[in-house]
Amino acid sequence: MSQADVYSLPARILHWAMALLLFSLLLAGLAMVQSLQTWHLTLLATHKSFGVLALLLAVIRLAVRLTHTPPALPTSLPAAQKRAAHATQVLLYVAMFAMPLTGLLMQGAAGRPVNVLGLFTVPALLPVDLRAYGLLRELHGWGAWGLIALVLLHVTAALHHGLIKRDKVLRSML
Image 1 (cartoon, helix red, strand yellow):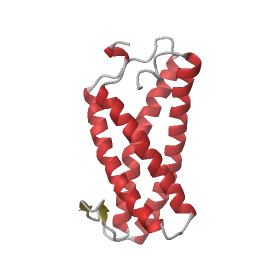
Image 2 (spheres, helix red, strand yellow):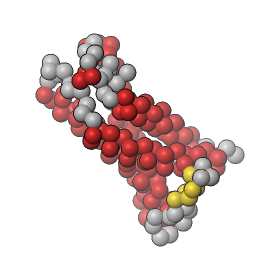
Image 3 (cartoon, helix red, strand yellow):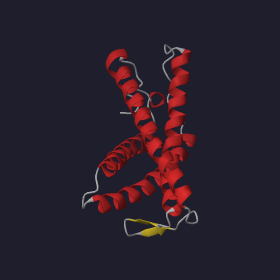
Image 4 (cartoon, rainbow, N blue to C red):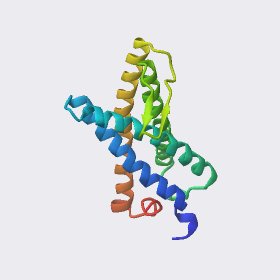
């Protein structure tokens, strides 16, 4: 494959790092709403720290995306599928920003600054407001379900291209 057929190395590294990070955040989020075990507070603190890390990586990833031209989709792909692929990518970027931001705002509305792995603290971004907290918690929860749906769609499409169509789409990110 030529350089024009693959994503840049920074884009590939950020893609797979974010994939692992988002997967762990989604699993942690699901585990936290299912249980109130003794490990819950540790998992919550880790989830918050990784959420801030995800936001920082999303900023870097967007900068890389804007400065590195991605490979073109196959010309054989119908226009509707190209639009769907573009829309899915845009929504994934929106979710990569919306999830950590709603989490940070939710914590602020609850009066809780976010300590990031003991390295620094993100101050509360909102004044304490339990109504805002409730709304942001709902948005964060629904956003997680939306992100899960987008990730499943993204993975399914990638596997379809790699295993069924056998075109260059999946290989461009590997």
